[in-house]
Image 1 (tube, rainbow, N blue to C red):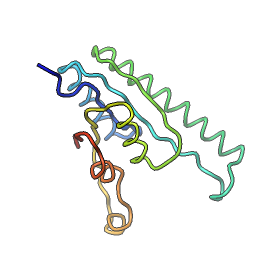
Image 2: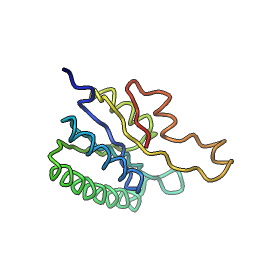
Image 3: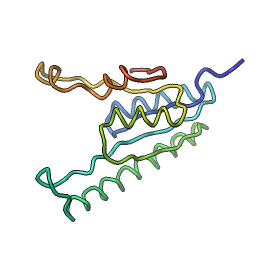
Image 4: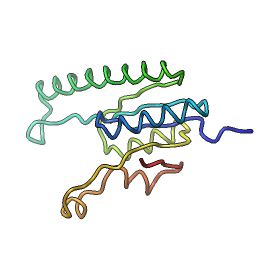
Length: 145
């Protein structure tokens, strides 16, 4: 019998929803002996929308270190549950595009995400969510929690 899912990707941004997706991925991976990759997309922000200043670079480095600490905690949790887990931080770009590119490059079999609630009709009309972009363009199954 072949494994259905060998590599699970969990886009992670530190929210309760991404924590939930990670914990569900751990549960699934431990039962089917799959590996998990946690992916966080960080945006390097420019001051006034034009310039990358020393301050904006320092802020980015600070955020990067915080995410690294979060990833270490997630990897430790996975190890406690006997699940192979790695993590990756990618810089800049549209999150959905980076998720899809990573999934394609690394032969991901399943993407696990949680849907956040969009509060206003204006947001629904003008801001397509990351999960919608991933859902519409993914080449592998997506489990939306």
